[in-house]
Amino acid sequence: MNPSDDTRLDALKHWLASFADEQGLDLETLRPASSDASFRRYFRLEGRDGSVIAMDAPPRLEDCQPFLSVGEKLRQVGVNVPRIHAQDLDQGFLLISDLGGQTYYQAIVAGLPDAPLQKLYRDAIAALVQIQHADTAGLPRYDEARLLAELQLFPQWYVERHCQARLSDAEQAMLQQVFSALAKDASTQPIVLVHRDFHSPNLMVSDGPGQGPNPGVIDYQDALAGPITYDLASLVMDARTTWEEPQQLDWAIRYWQAAREAGLPVPADFADFHRAYEWMSLQRNLRILGVFARLSYRDGKNHYLDHIPRMQGYVRQVAGRYGVFAPLLRLLDRLENRPVSYGYTF
Image 1 (cartoon, rainbow, N blue to C red):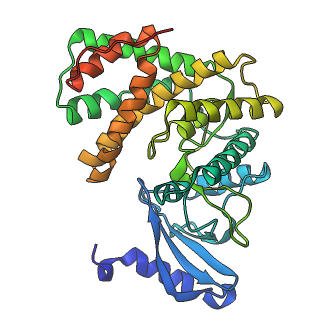
Image 2: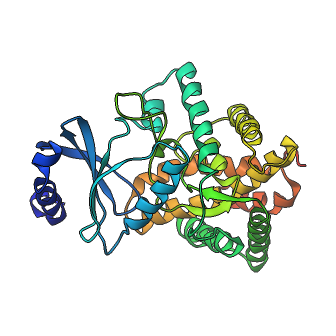
Image 3: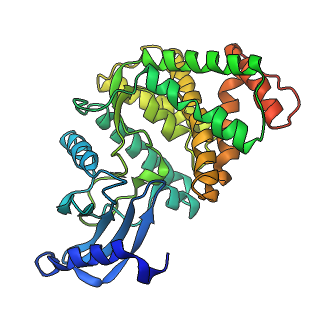
């Protein structure tokens, strides 16, 4: 978009100007901070006590109310989420605190050494335990029907559009059996507040004055009441950066220990927990393959295709471990033109 044609940016500037003196805002410093897979945009500008973030969420496309209500739920259990400095829900504008200039993902891409990386992720695990103590009243349920419906993105957008493949009747029936098993298994788990995208792009490195404890947690407006393993699966099988199995396992064990100590309802046997979160990850990652294909082919956000090989690897990791998913693995081999896969199953 030509900046001169950006009427929403003009409206945002006008709104900020209406209280710039009161908040000590320097409007000349307004610059893009980030955008995401939705229609929201974020801008950073300088205020009296440091930088702040202006959110632009077009009301006909985005609802700011869940951001406010879920943020309050998280704040009440000690999670570091943005403070609200000013709001105009009719226009879809918020002015919020700045939790840091770098996401976990940006820090990782910049070459963060292992010792500080491990510290960041221990902090993230502690924040996840806090999140799972939050009140779920009023949140939509991430139930079996919703989990099952999400999985239909995989055949529609990944298989048919991205892979340009047609499923046989037998393959379609097999996929629906796999989908049903995954959704049913997840729906039996204890219910907690689920962030839904608790991974490196939504965790801020909060290490500056006034930014609060690490990590700053953002992009939680789509939170649901759902399976306790979902957000851990998001964290250890990150859609934006690849973690090998030993690292996944280390963080999963640390979370499981912390969750048990905090009284969260995780299985007493880690082997049971490990299976549950891996199956949960398979549901999530099959869905994400469909989501990323849709973002590219429907919305023109082609950079999401760069992450598909990573998601394929995560799907194969789980599908290759459990015999019940062997037919799925054979389908993946066909879609990706690979030789027949063999592996250990449990």
